[in-house]
Length: 79
Image (tube, rainbow, N blue to C red; front, side, top):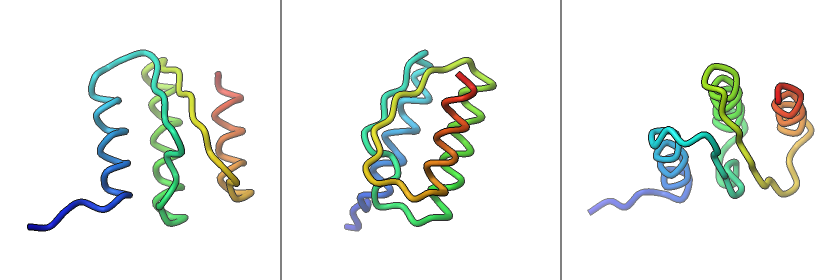
């Protein structure tokens, strides 16, 4: 039986938080284990969730790349 990877587990937990329709989403290191392309698309999706659904997202990210930090700064500016 195949098990899900750490990245798949992380994306699944984020999806479950989104589906519960709570106003506040808390993500503990959502980009850990993701490649740069997946990280980019995940941050873009979170940005759309914030704007389109009036959600608040709290995330902890350790040592983000400058590109990831730029996206997080954009998210912060929206709120």
